[in-house]
Image (cartoon, rainbow, N blue to C red):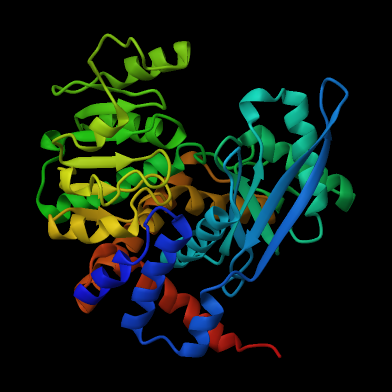
Amino acid sequence: MQAYVDDIRSISGENPFESMMSRFDHAAKLLHLNPDLYKVLRVPNREFTVYIPVFMDDGQIEVFTGYRVQHNFARGPAKGGIRYAPDVTLDELRALAAWMTWKCAVLNIPFGGAKGGIICNPTNMSRSELERLTRRYTAELIDVIGPERDVPAPDLNTDEQTMAWIMDTYSMHARHTVTAIVTGKPVALSGSRGRREATGRGLLFVINEAVEKLGLKISQSRVAIQGSGNVGGNAALLMHEQGYPVVAISDIHGGIHNSRGLNIPDLLAYLAARQTLEGYPGGEAISNHELLELDCEILIPAATENQITSQNAGRVRCRILAEGANGPTTANADAILERNGVFVIPDILANAGGATCSYFEWVQDRMGYFWKEETVNERLKDVLVASFHDVMRYAETHSVNNRIAAYMLAIDRVAYVTQLRGIYA
């Protein structure tokens, strides 16, 4: 453990790619990964940069920069979301693409990892501008994406409509309808039932397993959730319905705290009507930083990367940390959390419900037969519960924390398949 602490002290912990690679390197060492396989798995397979001219509503042309990183194809097509944000970087996308590779391997589903993004501020763009941006981005990548190559999905500031535009653009070029090109589509366009709630529902499934493992009681396990979007909001509602007291939740502006538990359906209705939690009368206002340090049994960071760092990890007081976001905990914070006895459910397991249901959608699209929502949820539970216990077995067998166990499991599976396939030369 000390060698690992020394290794991660040498990096800033703020760069998501560095955080991901420090964990990868540690897991690879513990696995005694073949040095040649190490060289292959530590780098992306492909990276694409595209420049996207778009006619804006005022008649002017703006040129946007877009990326797609395809990390690994050993277990199947690459899979990963597309995000629109002004701070998109290649390093961020490299980390997210690699996380998708490891996430799909932990789930034991036949995908590799990818991630895409466009540097833009979607809040300042009209719907028609976003449509033209999306369609041109898709056209620029038309030769490198596809149902058997790389299957995009929604991510930050993209949604079902974005996926519909991508599907239509790809289909126009293919000259026939190709539903399996993306996941996260509207149900009317061959999307999967249960997809919208899948990440939050997956969080519930793995948290239930952790609560049972640690001997806690649902009714006495206070939950604090940073984020109230698709992941945080759905997780809050599902956990409230299960009987968990959700004592805090936040949006980008700040949070609401009530030690007796919040009325989540009422709070979410307030949020939907006003687009903010500010002024909600059912609790006291707190900051996002304060929420992360609340006394609670379960903390779910479901917002963005780098929320729990070496600066605040020592003040995190939860028993279970379930990572609803990708990379919410920096590598420098891991050792602090472990020393303080926090049971971490790492992102590549905790928030994997969305990736699992994306796989289900891809399967349904390819066979042209669609499942009932109860069937989707039942199969989602089967995958998430099995994956949770696979990670626990690795943690116990190798005497490592849950995050490193998840990485070891994932790397072992990808390395094994890569070795079986061999290196084409």
